[in-house]
Length: 200
Image 1 (tube, rainbow, N blue to C red):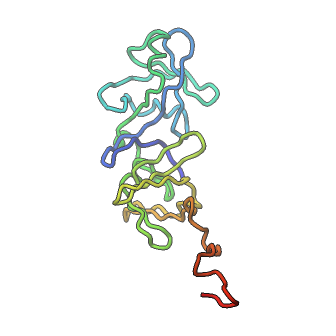
Image 2: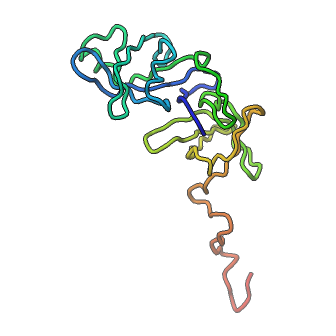
Image 3: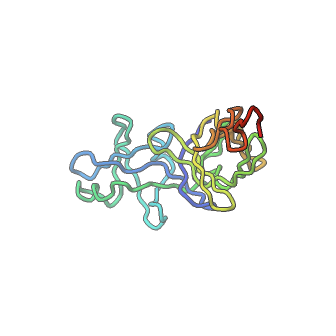
């Protein structure tokens, strides 16, 4: 599954998080950005970026890539102290600023928000509320009508089908904690105990 950005929480929000500030580089206000794009340089390829609220805008000046992080200057940030204050800042761009995806099996994470989620056994799990990467790989967050949140690895094994045209994706989730795996024998209960050679 080809992806080019992470979404922020919010079902109707059509902005993508392209990266997050993780540190500084030097003393002139250059920041290190962890990219959420396939090509780190794409973080600065789509025009000004905003913070998560959308109220503050930043123009990026790309200086290069170092050990997977994008080195860039942000407008209005010209010293190390100001750059350090931005650590944790998530940088967003409007979905409309990104080009359409031509590949059949490619999409932006923002396009998954609000999709219906059904199991391969037709179980209704709710809708997609977030797709993110917490360091151990992409995960998909699904919330059902009762507000229960499930988080699963976003892999082909767990999410075999994404159908944007029809507004849904299918999941083949692993058993939840405390649930037996399919085909596993159930634990013996009081009614299954043998007494006097007979089974109740």
